[in-house]
Image (cartoon, rainbow over all chains, first blue to last red; front, top):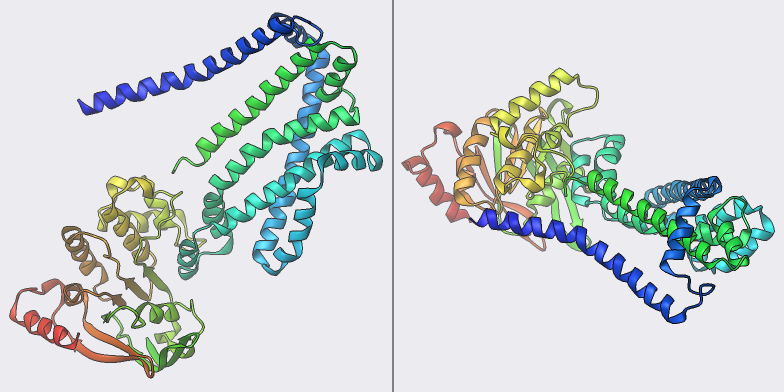
Length: 259
Length: 233
């Protein structure tokens, strides 16, 4: 009887987990529609219908996919680069603890560096492609580095001692002990930084006027005073960011199935 | 294994000063004593986890150690079977690994949970997995550091019965606070005491000549030894 009741409650929760996000999306659209109706100037706050029309028109255009592909490529490149460098530095500063204090001012400087100064300096020194990648890299790298350091420090010392006493090799200790133990913390960090990385690349593209990108198309829509198209690009960016987060969540769920 | 002139301190706190101890080959040495009498510190020195003075020499230079800790220390991301395999040396062929793992899993009655993660098994199964991991290694010295801590009496008895058969003929150091565990498993019981001036010394020793598997825990022989143990303690 208890089991049946529990199953019913679990099913109800599963249904609510699907319905509630849809309800909140509808609520956002409804609030936007009310604001749009109240302002009643299409140029400033276009209607939901006009935005939806622009969005579906964009989906039919070849340049939309080219821009999305290019922005995603830049995002992926910046992220992979930031992750690889952060992983190398985290491993190095964990192995040689003395390097950690030497490296900490660099991380602090990169972390507190105003994003706007970074973008402007990058635009002076590099081309628009390199600038967007560099900006995302500089913001994401300290986040990932800190996350990796915390994950390494969080590895259970008792398990490491056990591996050492049993004479388990370093390679196997890293593969079977360090990496799985670090995974939950790292995946949480990746989940929060991946969507931010995508947003940063778009922001940098706007300022760097990077050809064939989501950012430059947003900027062009703004110059044309085509707010509906600007909102359509924004919706596209939100959908892509959401898909990235969802994909990472699904990977995380599969990767840490022992929890 | 012979320990000669062992010196070790935690800062100003003297633990061992010129301490000697023999671990008889193929026998179980039970170490008892109150908290802070250096029992775990001694095994940490034996495992070379601490920097100490003096000599710890293994017979014929063999020093392959297996350690069952107070907590099972299982890797949460690995199944019971993979936790056992984790400590096997690199380069062993798959058939040997499978045979060894199957044997200890059967000996420790872990068949039902061999594919389960540690978070999904009971405390008794976790303790048995930790023992299986130690037994799979063909070690020269087995260290059991209060492996039954936190287990209920029934479960403890069940694991002791399994362990008695498994450790027969092996060199074992067994640390415990419980005289009943020591009398059931040990061949020799050593009671430690420590004072701040001299460090750890052996307060008393008892030899148990009866075979582990044939001990009558309520018989006259064990009852006499029990009395002696309590007198030393």
